[in-house]
Amino acid sequence: MLRRSGTRRFLKRGGLISLALNSPEPDLPPPGFLPDPEVTETDIWLRRLPVAFNGLRIVHLTDVHHSLFTPLADIQRAVHLANLLRPDLVALTGDYVTLSRTYIWPVVRALGKLRARLGVFAVLGNHDFQVDADQITQALSVQRIRVLRNSHFALRAGSAHLWVVGVDDLWWDADDLPAALRSVPAREPKILLCHNPLGVRQAAAQGIDFVLSGHTHGGQVRLPVVGSVYGRTKLGKRFVEGWNRLDGTQIYVSRGIGKVLLPLRLGCPPEIACLRLRRP
Image (cartoon, rainbow, N blue to C red):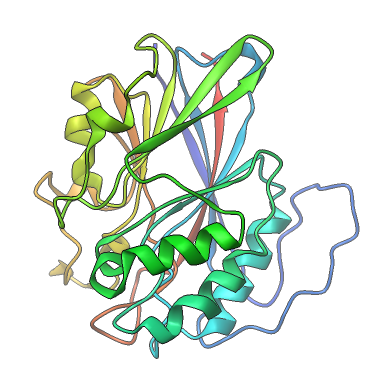
């Protein structure tokens, strides 16, 4: 039986709330133009999760959108805060730059400072395809970030496996989930990285256990009565932000870090999602 846990939220402005890391808190880099991202912590209960992976901590960053609207200092600070969470795995779900190739290498060098025991995994978003998908892939790979382009990677602990699957962007019709799942045993647990939450439809049809997405920015600008100016999906408001499920597949949609179209966030702070996998 799959269950949703309560979500704990910590809004950090100027310092990190203690997370009982049993180590002195290092000095934080100075804040940029945005307030510090909100760290949301959620337990994800997966029926098929092997005992060896119980408690696995995934830190999810998405939609950093390095550009004039999202300066590098804000991204560097988000990376620093993510590392303080001591992730086992970091998941990056696309849209690293906006409009220009000149932003690629600076943002990728910043993301290259992410540290996780089992590695950093990435997929591409629609803005990455608009700018230069191949160059972004190359840059991420140079930083030892594993880019999953319609492909998969097996996390192993003894005889147990947890599969990390990634697909290219849906808007560009570049996604190929069947190819990404080729040779992955149907009965073993799978986590899908997919920039667009619309991918949950295919994921549910293919028996994916859990999906990590971004793309919506949580709406980015939320007005009284009107609600989100943009960021809505064809699946409805419940897939714009946070935890949800479709059939037997769970999904978490992060609000992300950066901004597009408008140089501000309103009523919708940036987010670093920290997700702990649990056995029921």
